[in-house]
Image (cartoon, rainbow, N blue to C red):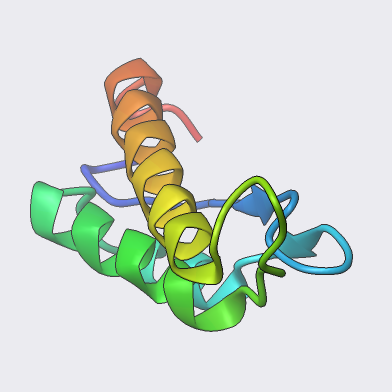
Length: 88
């Protein structure tokens, strides 16, 4: 975070499809924006559209989509708290 704007973001997801993937759409939502609750919510919701979870004996596809959203939101919120302000 530099000048209250996100300058770099990477979001990787596991168990959200056949292979690991990057949520580049979510990353793009974050870039050059202040990491407010609303921006984090938007980026987290975008994850649901890029994953292709497989339903199995452990969880339904819907549950896995919700889990991806929740864990992404938690991770982005924690990253915002940990980010050194003003340092690139």
